[in-house]
Image: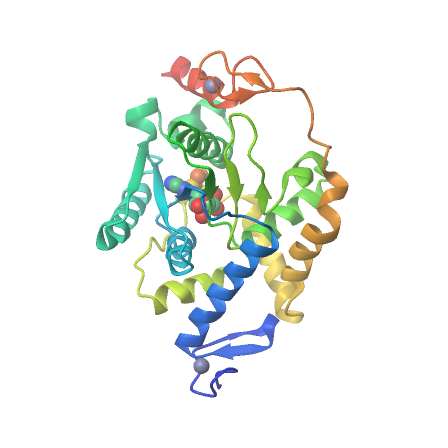
Length: 300
Ligand code: AMP
Ligand code: FES
Ligand code: ZN
Ligand code: ZN
């Protein structure tokens, strides 16, 4: 296998681009894809203060690395979720990456700062842990950004994540979610802009990127995610991709270009007002995060 660019020995093939790359040209490929996503979707402007949501996994560490390479300085925010050894190791990887570079990594500790962990929340709600987890992550990342003057929150959602979420939303015709599934969610009162610069890179590419760049990341999957429907969707999509490379990219990017706008407006439900407890914008009186906290407190 030879590098498509320089004909040197290739270390990875990217079938959907009908290409293979040596380590150096693979890094160029990843940077090009991120640059293209940022430009195509108008994700960032030069003066933005950017906060990267850093889990300690491959995607978010690669994202932080790639943004720096593209001259987009960013601080990190790591949320300590209290999921046993998995969280301990994730925090270690995030801190090690940041401190080796002298970059700023903020931390929020769900247990110390808010009085509960994700397992506590799952037990209190009798629902899959991922729903309390996703809700808490969205709330805390946004709150941190708004309170500390960041314009943008960048997350490491990749092509495989977006394809799996899209398939799930389509299978159930979740029109409200489809209206909000965008590579950029614009800022609004009480909300920082949200961007996903990795939407043009797959999971396998991001793992290879970390190996080539010698980024030490948390390789374990979350132990609470085993019943997660998205894992099944990823398997199905991998099967389709294997038979017909480019399927995932066509599905996701075709949706962003031609499908998504048909669903905007589907989620403009009730007007938002400040949460009576924390002040975050919410359609109800108390926001979902504060209601979750109250439920966990009741049970404790
Ligand atoms: P996930 O929801 O685990 O698929 O993660 C999607 C993205 O959310 C990651 O790429 C990160 O940008 C962000 N994220 C997930 N977990 C954390 C965490 N513990 N702290 C900060 N950001 C996170
Ligand atoms: Fe949120 Fe596993 S990381 S439930
Ligand atoms: Zn090359
Ligand atoms: Zn609230």
